[in-house]
Length: 121
Length: 121
DNA sequence: TGTCAAGCTCGACGCATGTCGAAACCGGCT
DNA sequence: AGCCGGTTTCGACATGCGTCGAGCTTGACA
View 1 (cartoon, rainbow over the protein chains, first blue to last red):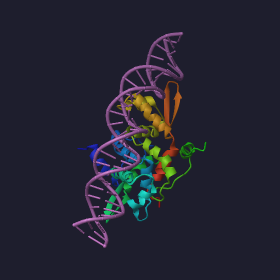
View 2: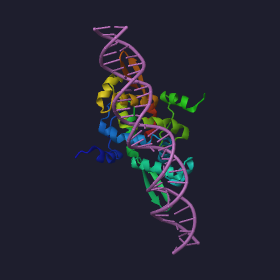
View 3: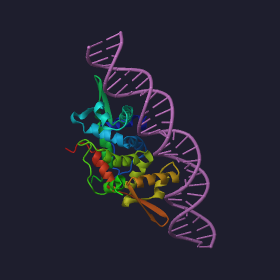
């Protein structure tokens, strides 16, 4: 029952220190299959900027109404990108009154950072 | 030819400590435009595994002939992915006799790691 | 209850991407 | 010179992705 895909995303979004730096040990296919989508989610300029605005937001959260006007694309496109970040496990959304607030999920981002970290000797 | 794209990739591939963690300061559009392609390059399971095999290779380099048999795709597909990693500035290739050896370029990967690093407070 | 604004979903369009097989290239070897 | 194995390039194909506009949902407020 150690199905790779089902549990992994949640595991990784948690505090589990899953993987050593890739410079020390190469990742197996299952891990690559789980982490690659997270990198892919950051692989668009708009999403990378969105992610950074959310991560750097004072108070740890930011309203969509503050994100949208910072870009040259339509609101529906921003919404689509936010959904991608949500489904990648990188952010969380919460509706309060008329507004929706996004906050970063540090778990997965930490995993990615650890993986890229140069030889933590 | 002060084309933005031309200099930035090289700059970032160097040792320049360009960006603070995104949890501390959001990235601007220009930086996102340069860094996002690197994340995108890591956003495919095959490429992520290739990158890790190269980064973790003993001696710092590894032959394509050792990479190819580790995957279920054809050699031309591996070659295509390696080209993507090369163009992203993540790896370097060198031909020696009949074989081509790849090695990791630590600069850019360090930048990405720094960007993802949780509040280095 | 009706209206309005914020945000999401849906369908569509064009371009990018992953994959393959075939062909070209590049060095060694006979 | 000619062959051969390793690697890259070239078309071609199906799928995925970023973007838009239109329409829908949700909650506030008069």
